[in-house]
Amino acid sequence: MLGPNSRALVAACLALATNGLAGKGNPKLTCASCHSHEAQTQTRTPMGSSIELPGHQDVLRTHPKLTFTQNGYSYVVEYRDDGGRYTVSDRTDSLTLPIRYAVGVANQTFVLQHQDRFYESLVSYYPGVAGLNITMGSQRIHPRNLVEAMGRELSNDEVTACFGCHSSGAVEQGQLHLDSLRPGLDCEHCHAGATAHLEALQQGRSGVTPPRLAQMTSEEMSNFCGNCHRTWDTVVRSRIWGMLNVRFQPYRLANSACFVGDDRRIACTGCHNPHQELVRDGASYDAACLACHGAATGEVKHWKPCPVGKSNCTSCHMPKVELPGSLSVFTDHNIRILHPGDPYPD
Image (cartoon, rainbow, N blue to C red):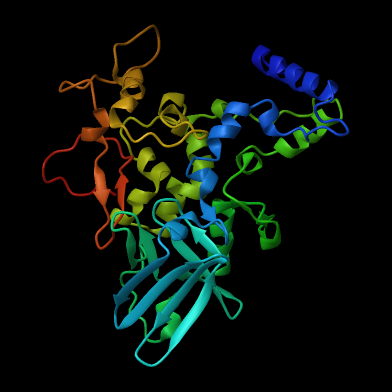
């Protein structure tokens, strides 16, 4: 049964459809027709711009020629009007491929195609050095030829996961359809049923309203977001140990002493609005921390307040971790009390 807010929203959407917004000669009804604020801000988030296609590769456009040398191989990444070019060479030969898919927002790795196979480029762009360096996770690779120096061959499952998490419309029922790829994650990617809902509204019907993700428990949301950010179960089954798993926020969060599976305050959306750009000011998260560690109110369970301070909580309890041999720094979502000399907790 729909609650009063949901009924009001459905009524508003039906009014838009009935008044001819989606009628002949008028703009097509879209999610933005009713959810304008979310639609405007979501495209600027990392999820909304997580892959760049030729002609829209802004990182490469602003860095038209990048060079790097490692393990006896030289790399040149150049931007042209029709997209980027990725060249690797040794002392006698070279291999040049078009960059059809530039994946990532800050750090950017290139997905390349060679002889009908997909490869993850061995070098990536890092804004910290405004240049190229070895792709995270590939530091131990010692290439023996140009193809291995060009990149790491991806398995079919890796390719499907890559495009399924960084784009929309490219994966349907586990099958890859790059001809229908749309850059970034659109509404339908997370809100299953959004397209059917819109089609119903255009016909003057309410249809089935997509489930409200905000109603998920913290564990349900952790598993939902973990489809791309890795779930606790995935990390454990894959035995991804050591600092490398700091990248997988749902796993790290679930290891926190304060994580309770049915408490929405510790859910991903308790701190992050997925429709807005990531907030990097640590103090802005204090309210979320104090919602659990503040003064007890009513029957809501509260955890012990911090005896040291009540501001900039994340600066102490969610340390920044730089992956060894990498230029990438991640916020550790394993919320805990740290002591000098504590080892990294798996």
